[in-house]
Length: 223
Image (cartoon, rainbow, N blue to C red; front, side, top):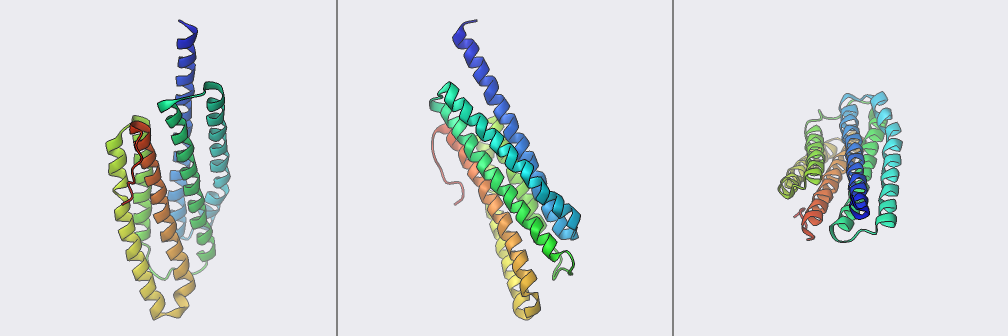
């Protein structure tokens, strides 16, 4: 085996390790979204606090992946698709970390609302969360499998989440107009819906990153 081929094998192994770490980060974020919304629906303060405490692990893993990306750039001086691969990794972990922040924001709202009855049953907000989780899972699968079609299909779900967000907005606005006592909680629930809508936007960013990685083209998938 030549030195050049040995170096390439080492580099490819480092890229595979990087991909695995990104998937691990994605799993942490996906769990945080699920637990944050579940904590709100069940008004489970302990679960909400677990989400908040777990945000540090997400932040730490993101920084570790950043460091690995920087080392690869410094030691391998990548060009063309290899450089796009590392650049895409930076974008993905940034979007995942922000999703984790939004999950934490939802958990903090749970703590604020834990001791008061909800002004309405939560139906569309859990639906938004499930769709957002599926988007995150699908765009990460598309990243691992270099599957442009899957990335585009996943991003198309953003329209469904936007529709649910408008539905939640209109319903909560009507409740708050009828009864001013619901305004504070209604505003918090509107924020939860907004955070989930933003999580979907970040998932779309990842899908766009996959498209750029595989084709070299930048395309807006959030139309």
